[in-house]
Image: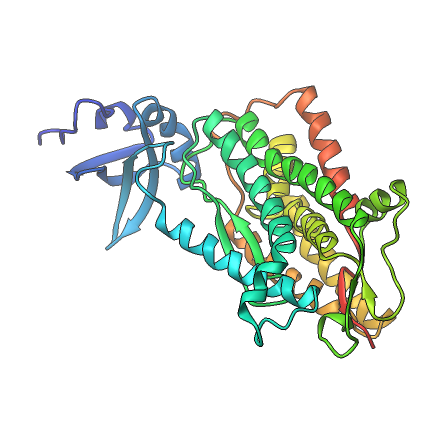
Length: 366
């Protein structure tokens, strides 16, 4: 039987038969699909053949479709093709939801006067700025290491924060532990710089009046050591008397710290898992099993010691971490150690993540 033919820029099926035995090839516009049998587990096969395709401008994945194993080679592109309308639409919606959330922190009745939403722009700018800097840190290092990644997707949410954060999606194999480390650590470090700046600006701005009848007036924010330390260094308070609260820009800094802590949890596809996986390799599997245990334990403690205040948040994240465990962690092609400088940066980053932790970050008074 004649060997299946492929375009000239792709590896010949005979060049990787020890990893994936091909019996048919289907060529599409931007994909080439190799039908055959993997000779090892999926992760091992991809690790062995990905460099062969990567050098030719393709990324690979193995799928099981209609009873057949398919090795899918897709053209890689680290640039942006056309206008990313989904990203733009989500960003615009998130601007609106953060403006609405900010109006609550400023005591603005946006329902009575929708045009007054614009007055909440400092809050929206602080929140979106922190999130954008975090995600663009990932994106910049993805481009540096020639890893295909999307622009940030902002996640709007009509709550008192206005958003559930932002994400980028890596659609590529990671070439090395060093690349995985750099991409993973860049977001938290960039976001921390933005968080420090936003917090420092926020604590120096005047507090705002907050009628006690509003929902926001009943919210108690637990400030992490990072935010409290910045306020202390600048000699500014984080608590005011009845009817007044911190400037909403401080809430933007609080969001930055909270997002940083959550992202640095070493589980699944979170930044902390990328950093930890880069530092200790496959031992991440043991480490990440401790994450849901810790989160459920913290939730249980708050149920017992604090009457349940703030417990729901950690119980919810405990459930999420179980889902993240099932999703697995990123696996780089080259498993060479990252070296001492990156080990130091990784340890410092994880320590800074601890400074962003508050046992009861948000709760309702009473």
